[in-house]
Amino acid sequence: MTPISRSGVGRRGIATLICGALAAGGLAAAGVTALEPGAASASSHREAPLISGQPQYDNTDLYAFVSPDKPDTTTIIANFVPFEEPAGGPNFYTFAEDAQYDLHIDNNGDAQSELIFRYTFKTHVKNKNTFLYNTGPVDSLKDPDLNVTQAYDIDLIKLRKQKVVAKTRIADNVPVAPSNVGKASMPDYGKLRDEAVYKLAGGATTFAGQADDPFFADLRVFDLLYGGNLSEVGNDTLKGYNVNSLALQVPNDLIRESSYQPVVGIWGTVQRKDARGHWSQVSRLGNPLVNEVVNPQKDKDKFNASSPYDDAQFLKNVTNPELPKLIEGIYKIKAPSEPRNDLVDVFLKGVKGLNQPPYVRPAEELRLNTSIKPSMHPKRLGVLDGDNAGFPNGRRLTDDVIDEALQVVEGELVGSKNDLGDGVDENDQKFGHSFPYLAQPTSGSRGPLAKGTGNSVRNQLGDGLQATSAGTNTTLIATSAAGGVAGALLIGTALMWWRRRTRYRAY
Image (cartoon, rainbow, N blue to C red; front, top):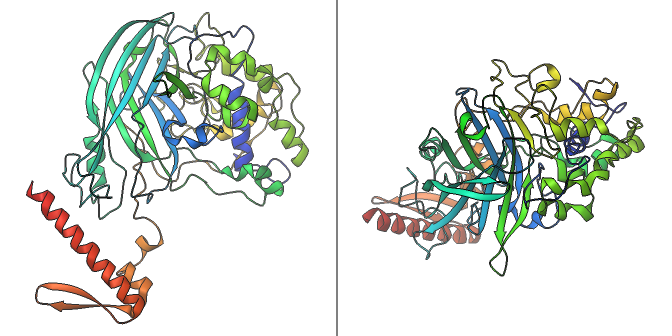
């Protein structure tokens, strides 16, 4: 894949923006009318004014794919809380308690939910008299030293024409994998991750917890398309950041209408309670990057609060997108002719003969044909490269949606063949081969100090601190004023830690 160069379009970030334009092609088409307060799509890392200040409710990405190691199941992954700094304590990252995190399934192409998997969370604090997230090394999710914990329920809601016909609790009080505080606090984080994977009745499996952000892109595109002269390209902006993930693996037969109609549409929403105790939708997500770069400022919050049936109001943003004009103005690549009906057809309805359900009603959903078997050797460009198990037939973790979207938005489907790409072809961490497939979150102890040798505190303070032995105790002696303060602080912290550890272990 040829990276976009100075003679073409700017690399990563421009591709990121274009991906929004492409995915938004699925936003609007003739005949889209109002319905449920539901969902559409976005790869929404801080994509709208209101939600950017509410990270716990902010969908960042949605993935849906036939499980590679269990092809009779589908895996859905929804991520939240963008840009989690791994060392961002002492209040690490939790799901909101006043929220409903919903995964919607449309299994007959009518642009309405037939199934909703609803996640709700509760937070528990063992000792409110300490500022610590954990009071010692954590060996398991039941460890008394894990001071702040979360658990969740899942309700399966069945609907007909948006009327609830059944509601079943399919998971109760399942523990959440905690934030990866650091190697000292969580010496075997993989064990904690494994304990958070729960099998449910009926063949489903669930996971909730922190993970490495699987999306890869250079978000410096927002600095006037990479500085206006491609001087700011080539870095995966999301490298090293984590997200909070929901992962659900369900039997295909549970979510599809029948083996004769295996295509499902999937999207996510988040509702939170307002001041009067009423639920209000504040975020939604389906295809990647829609609300970030397609909708103008005046439409972004409205888009997050509306449903796929309402997306006709955003039609002009799609058929006459802003981004290609910006690229033409800065980098002199001619924008494809408008209106962009090529984008509307593929991303509102699904690809005919692949993931377009019969009698489809145009709506923005991530559409997946659950009868397409997983690829033995997945290609990152998915359908564009002949791999029908990939994007836009669902979305796998490894799918390079930036490159795919870039090529289509710049006219791949209307005769303007191109080989454009953003130069970022994969995530910085490898994904797993079994559920939940996500890479483990970056540890809070990572970084220059974690890579150093010896005592990092002593390396910073120099010879101001010296270790001496007094019987069986080790004390830090300060030989300077600065060292004295630091030494006293270290001694006090160590004593507090030892006392808390002893007290909790006594329980």
